Image (cartoon, rainbow, N blue to C red; front, side, top):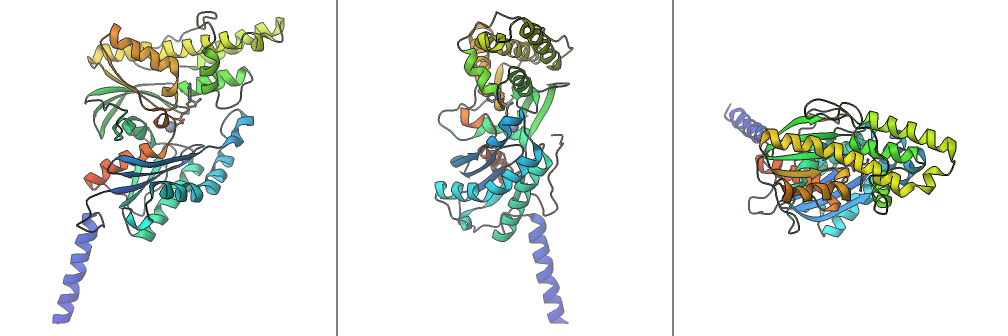
Length: 366
Ligand code: KG4
Ligand code: ZN
């Protein structure tokens, strides 16, 4: 009877321990090492963070999509499968960290391409189980926003509350950020994302995917006021980019009929004009949101936040409208695992861990 009671006491103590979800690490260890994995779209990335500082942040891109004018989901998952082991291995090597030193494994659980997400999710789950350490699921769009909190001497952290214009290949959102985990979307696109607008315009002009960085590059030598494209008329803080794409398409079809070399001969001016149209649309709603909320701390996030004209437009408003602009370092704009790691670090501090049932989701709310 005594032995039976002791056994149940031991069992209940173990269950209490498990349900508390305490970080499984030695009490004397003060530093927190997190391995983060990002595989939501076409970049396989792994990073190691120590207390929110980036020790390594590696990204393996996928050139296989260039010829298709966009990401091919099936090819993306296959490339992640091929890249994930060497990328994680290299991230640990650059960080000079052994797997046994890690305190948690973090991964992007969504939103994104399901096949791509599943590669990172399965890998992270297996590694956390093998090492017997906590697993942390991270929302991709939240990570773009919270990239501003990566410990980095070259970046200034925005104070709460701030507004973040999050612009990527799949999303365009104005987010009001009141705390690390108190984020609210106050405006978003009703059709194409800003990155999609760049990429589709580039595709119409015959440029390879992703066209955004190329438009940015050619625009530097062009006249932004040469071709005025139509601007959407849409209420509130929401966006629409599908009309712009159609107006570029019809305009070029008309011009190319008269001169087959029209695009090549006017590439710089076309890129500068398209870029200006997109940036004007983005800034108009951001200004409206700043005015109506009274929040003047404004951040940019996501792949399109690498765009030089968008960064310049926000920076200029520091003087003209009294904003304080927060621009992420270039390596934290496009998809990267360091941003997943910083969200994971803040979840780790709260003891907010995932269990073995967690799964990837293509669509996700905050
Ligand atoms: O955040 P991200 O790496 O992936 C998604 O989550 O979608 O964003 C990728 C998007 C692509 O559409 C790409 O063309 C765009 O960001 N992008 C740019 C620039 N750099 C990346 N767009 C305009 N100018 C850039 N410099
Ligand atoms: Zn992204």
